[in-house]
Length: 370
Image 1 (cartoon, rainbow, N blue to C red):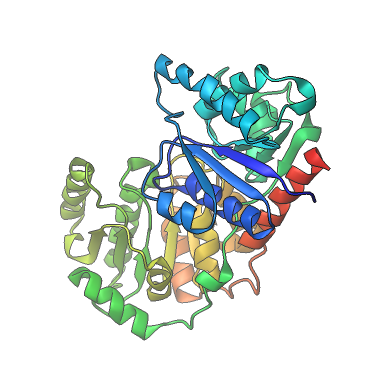
Image 2: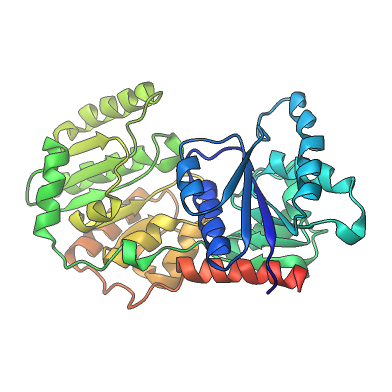
């Protein structure tokens, strides 16, 4: 493939799956000898982006205000000045600005438009912009079905399913139980000490992550006589104090306050997986993918989750025993007991790798430029 200049559009570079994918593709572009430019409002991941050899242009293209339209001329000028080959939009408002910027360019030299549907956004004309790419990347089969169901005018031949991927080297297989990792977990919070099964639910402090369901499950397991513990890394964040207080009230009412730990996000999530006996993925809203499932299985830990969205899709393909009918607490309890008592053999390999995702994305760029 000839040397390309690819511009990725997203609101900011703070945290999350969209931002992570942006950096991963920028790294793949630079490694392959291409030029990677990211347009956003910046954020804490900006130094990491620059460190991999990518470039950044600061435009607040994710600000939800009519004033954001003033960035269209600057974006159009950037596309012309840098002779951009591909515009890759990863979020709705930046995608609209990208479409408007491209509209003012002549067809022979106009960059090709790629979009990635990262989430199951509410169907609307506003969200429909994510289906306007000449190639539309869907992060799972779940997303592809969602797009075709809610936007039936979309040409299926333009859709490409490219699953998000993990780097297995960052989530190496660990023996189970891993007593050293469990001892480390106990240093993170006093409630994590003990020899009973440790449940792990990583995720932001929001009701959508299903923390309340995890508390109910913990109470049921402890009522069985198990000295089970529950760790919720990532739940305790600034601005989430009221939410955590409500969960602490629920925990006190269930009699499990001393057996669970709400902590800040950890940079050692692979070690947290290794310390656990069972990883939970209980999002109340179907997710587009479910990277947690891949990370935990790569480390060698069983996963239990609601069988909907991308999480259900991954579990059905990689560990069917962990897929539970959504919101069936009795089935969740039974599933947890079975997986703790008889952990299934983890997959020999995880098919959804970072390298596969990067190569497939660059192949999409090649489709439009070769």
